[in-house]
Length: 399
Image (cartoon, rainbow, N blue to C red; front, side, top):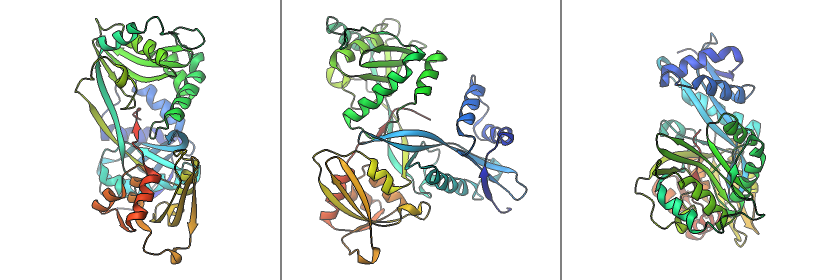
């Protein structure tokens, strides 16, 4: 195999990249050309990288979509790795590993402090420091239970300010993004992305989904083949939640089944008059730390958490993470300070890139040890790091 190198994908490369994509995953379906045009336009110019041989033939490509991801209720710049395609005849020659390492380096250059992806194969991404961070969960409800939730509070299912639910329009996109950000901060969640204003506007302009808005909330859902699928639902009060869920369930005679891609601990579970169905489907996603100092300094923490943990990381693909660290949390904010590695004693936990990513995503140190991803340290130090990184991350969108 000739020597591999990487470079930015340019417009002239797109037919070759699409051809590799189709040979790897099959032809685009209905609407696929519009999707391909959108994601290509989003990532050309620095966020799509190709692996080429000595004759500049494209052997693989991948993109880093520019997202924000909530961690502790605060929003960090996240590179969403997607569209990783390798020419089938070049598999097993190092193309995929070369590509993922180039993507990691580029994300660091662009200022993405964390990364996320949905893996087709975990081993490839683990070699580059990714680890399982959580799940995208589909929960199923009986539509009549949601209808009854709305009916039970019909007299009060009007949001603060006196505005009832109304159909959403593209002009509501900024409001919807603001409400989504506020809700993620209010609940202190970790993992979910917040769609951009343009993404919300596009959903409504293309009539892909149905949307309704109240003064302090909104719902976006799909209705097809007699099934409702809720993509987003944000509510600032019990009354708004009841009104929006009531809308979702209002057509239960024609659409008796409701799927949701929301927080697995969405408050509807507490308010509903019955249990969710047992058909729960989970899709795993993987996370990675790109820049520990920047990510830790912008992550949210419990307002009453006050703790300091010691950590030594070895991350050759993201050198900014390598070294000894003092991780301090106080009053809801965190600081990551470099220590002299030679001065760190055996009480500091030692992890590689995978262990660092798993720790970031809330895996306890005891589980990292059992998986062979951590060494050294002490019981006291383990407890401190567990307190620092405690989280139950989830994602609601697939990309």
